[in-house]
Length: 340
Image 1 (cartoon, rainbow, N blue to C red):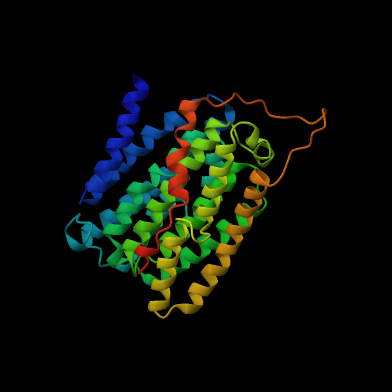
Image 2 (image 1 turned 30 degrees about the vertical axis):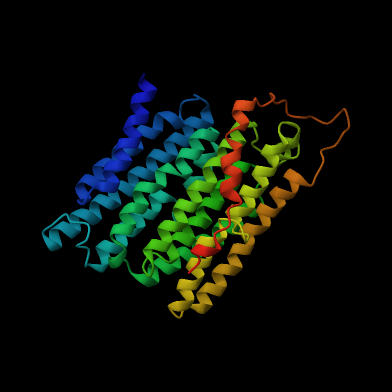
C-alpha cells in the first residue's frame, strides 16, 4: 500500500510540474518528485543503494536551491512568478543550470552514473526516463529565454563526455547512464532553435530506453559478460536487445536516427555547420560502445569450458516474451515519411 502511494505521488508530482505555470508551484512539485523516488532507490537496503540515494538527494536539493534562487530573483525583477517572463540573462542561465543538473548534463553530470549503478534496474529505468520529463517540460516552456551560446556549449560538452565516459564501461547501468548524458546533449543543443525537435528526441529516447531496461531486468543482465550468455535465455530477447541498442545509437534506418537527423538539419539551417559536424563526430563515440555491446550480444559465443562461470537465469515464460514483440516493432520502425 505504501509503495502504491509513493508511486502515485511520483506520477502526480511530474504531471503537476509539467502543467504548472508558476516557478513556485514547479519547485514544490519537483521537491515532491525527489522525495517520492528516494524510497525506490534505497529500497534494497544495500550500502551502495543508500549511497546512491544520498547522492541523488544532495544533487537534487542543490538543483532545487538554484531553481528557487532563480525563480525568486526573477519574481523580484519582473514582479511575477510566470515561467514565460524570464527576460533577465542571469536568472534564465541559473534556471537552465538548475534544470540541467536535475536531468544530468555536463558539467553537473557526475551524480548520474553512480546513482544508476547503485540502483536496481527498474529504479534506474525511472531515473533515466520518467524523472527527466518534468525538467524537460520546464525547459521547453522557457526555451525562448535561454541563451543560445550557453545551451549549445552544454549540448556539445554533454555529447562529448557522454561518449567518452561510456567507452570503457563494463557495467551496463553505467553505460546506459553515459548514454543518457550524451542524449541529453542532443536534446539541449537544439533547445533554443527548435524546441519541438528537442521534445521529439527526448521522448524517442524514453521509448527506446524503457524496453531496453525491461529486457535487462527480465534476463538479469547487468554486465557485458552477462550479455554473452543472453541468447541462452531467449533468442528473441537477444535480437530485440541488439536492435534497441543500435536504434538508441542512432543507426539508420532505425527509429533513433530520426531525431538526430532533425537536429542536424536544424543546426545546418541555423548556419551552425561546424557545430553540427562536431556533434556528429561525438555521436561516433556512442555508436562505438553500442556496437561493442551488440557484438557481444549477438555475434559472440561464451566459452564452453566447464570452469567458466555462467550466470544462472530462469527460463522466460511465454507471457514475459509477449512484451518483446512491441519493443521489436518500435526499434525497427522506419519513418522516412516523417523526415522533413
